[in-house]
Amino acid sequence: MLAASARRRRLTVLTGRAYESDTAPAFWPWVQVLRAIARLPEMTAWLTADAPIAAEVVALVPELGGRQPGHRPPESEAARFRLFDGVATILKRAAERQPLVILLDDVHWADAASLRLLGLLATEIADAALLLIATCRDVESERTPAVAELLGTLARAPACEWIALGGLGRDDTDALVARLLAAPPSSAVNSTIHELTAGNPFFVHEIARLVATEGAEALREVADMSHSPPRRVCATRCAGGSPISRPSVASCCASRP
Image 1 (cartoon, one colour):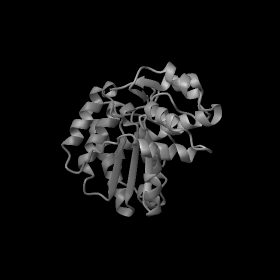
Image 2: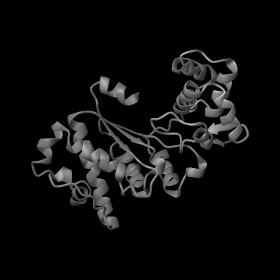
Image 3: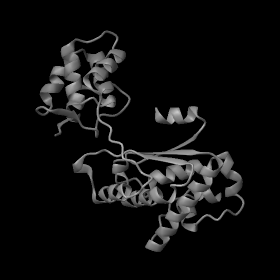
Image 4: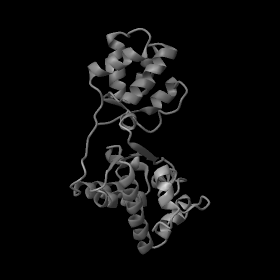
């Protein structure tokens, strides 16, 4: 929704996403962003005119130097700093031509180097026409040392703002369910959906799909297979395009304080 709003205002939106997988290469969210920058028409002339791009950045994202794709992270602290400074330079240069919105999703899964780069950029790009938004799940059990370090860095950066997003209230959850189902459900069904999802819009949508395909009685089995109240839908497994089944929904439900 935010990206769509930015595009309506003719802003350039670039996205990167971290993945819950050890197989994702280092700096992967930033590689996605930098590859997108390399494709921007307004950056083409600069990138092909012997632009002062750090060799470490080109080694990570060869597209920026007009070379074949590859991925070689820096191997020393000095090289890593040159990479960080080079990325900041490219982002500021791109923002001079067109205001940018950069969306980094699920940074709680990002590698430590990506998080350190994010922390540095929070101070280096404060005067650029650039809005950098990073989403991070605020769950204590997933707050790794690297995430904790990043949050500390951002807390000290004057240009940064932390926005905590809670779930929808009961009325808004009911309204969303009503939009998703052909027939308005009973108050009891709405209450169960809100309890299972804690108002998380994504999971409200997933549970509503379950009700639409299997009926409201499916909620009883989901609730019985879930942990004791307060029930919350854990944001680690409920994903995918096909309608979710009762066991998979139950596996997503976990008690959270």
